[in-house]
Length: 146
Image (cartoon, rainbow, N blue to C red; front, top):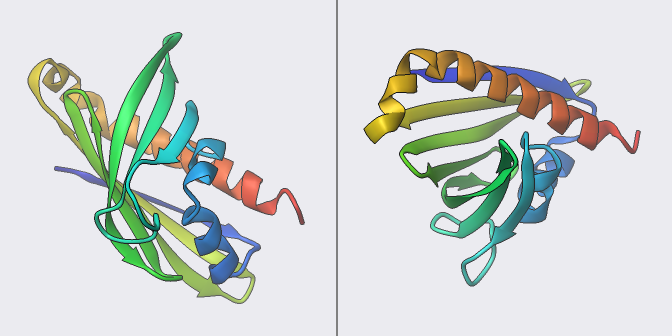
């Protein structure tokens, strides 16, 4: 499984950035084509084992994605495992304090199963495009109030 990584510097503190990422509804504001993102488990979103459901618009259709928090360290990292039919993935955000704000490192691991395996040769490209779009959107949304 290849790991795709990308990073961006935002002009927000680690605390502001983490609080934004730790609010489930905010994910629909920056994940490409995500139109809904809601917590589905009881209790706080910010804990390992918490679950959420996202809805993507893909080729004019709404597609459900199920998520589970697999890493959660206050003001440091947040990672999720996702299930999208025959595609499973893990992705996450690592926050590093910087004199100018926060360095956000985004990582993604894609696994194709079943018929989706025919796209395996392209998963690196698909992942890189997703990573760049995600971070570009995240930076735009976080810095909108500056």
